[in-house]
Image (spheres, rainbow, N blue to C red):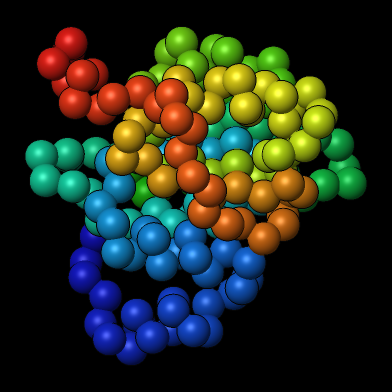
Length: 180
């Protein structure tokens, strides 16, 4: 991705919408991101903005992206992309996507066993709640992140995304490289 001019940085820092996701956009501008895990892709607008802003770290040729979402089974009351549209949109950005359909409470185990820990984790809804999804996120989050990961989460879908601390048992990224 190209470096942003000072006016573009000014826009993303103070004027970007929605305000509830501004901290996520600033993180994407300031830190190199090689992999993203998104729990709850929604309409896809958020990830499109993040993909247009992020820079790859040295030695990484392609961004690795994984998402867990109900997709078609989300129902008409919530704006969601269907699975085919999500694949199409992500391929336009040149992203290697691993999309897992299903409720996060059931699909997170599959993600933890098939996807490496991610640099950026976006949790849109369910974090910190006593729901089945909240419990599944709390149980699997240490396997989904590494010591240098950043996590943005909200308790409700479409809510204010805030940076949360890493779990104490997060996977050591350096140990993963030596094991590979």
